[in-house]
Image (cartoon, rainbow, N blue to C red; front, side):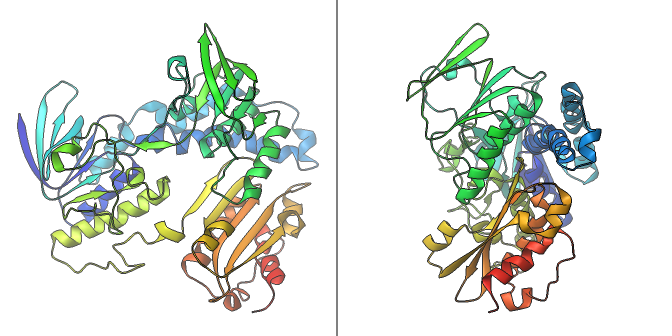
Length: 472
């Protein structure tokens, strides 16, 4: 058994863990990064990158088909095998050699194996060969192990060997018939992709689609999915799942039976903490790890957590944002330097609370930042909601024939600043960073009038929203 000391130990070498380690090394610390699977994690191999690689070809084809002149030149269908091959390249063919090279070049020590806490500031790593190494942290341990899909307790579902997010993004072939249970981002993105591949897709949603966003977002996405040929069953509970040979049968509470070749579960996530030995440090295995805004786990002065495992904002970019704050503050505290832990300071993840940007890469896309109308009111703000049809913007009509979409701006009437913005439409993700700057910077509406949008671009939506609101 080998024992090694480091200033910081990071559990999980996904994008989030890599960022913690990198920032801490830049701050002068020695860091061990522990990973039991592929370095680069979920986002690189089974989530962000491969899923967007699956979505983009269909989006590009439909964009061309909706512009006269280009439409006449586009006469074929997607080459599905070419799409899958391109996806494979984005996932580096599930080979992490490039990521390992980056880790080593950044001055981070990579330790392969499964880590479990064996005491305060101490983890025992069981390597691929069964050997163990005890790592001890001088200053901190950070948990960045991410999350796993939740498999709901539907009768027969687990026995039917359902796909989850990993299987659907890494599939080697496209099922002829596909049932997806869930109405969140993974469900609707993969329904969009596979409907574009020619699968007969059925989406079963217990409630509404994209229910955490503005209602019109889910409504427009459902309308689009149905136009692509998908069946979307809203307010529908799944009661029983059975697999017989190559066929999966799904029964719903309202008496429907849907048959498919594969079934996908996309009904939420749970923290990947059940086998970390949390009980040895007074925590409960399988629980989320709540933190303060410096990402310090509640009740500890040495244990940090970042990314999905915190349940703050289950998005890769927010996890990386948390990681930058955590890596910097761990280095600052280890070196006895001042900590900037006031809201919006260097060492805090303030944006997690009311300024989280996110994109759902359906067609149309959904891009949002900050509050919805509902959450702003629940938070006690005095608000006004401003809506505008994106298709009425000159730049939108140039981009695509029959451009359809909607924008909503939520205004804090007391301070005359924007609390949230939602865009739904083709390629609206390009509009999101301007909205993020407006929300994070709390730019007054009277100053935004001087941010002139270039014409004719879809960015003119900002002028239209302000005109609809009226001069302050």
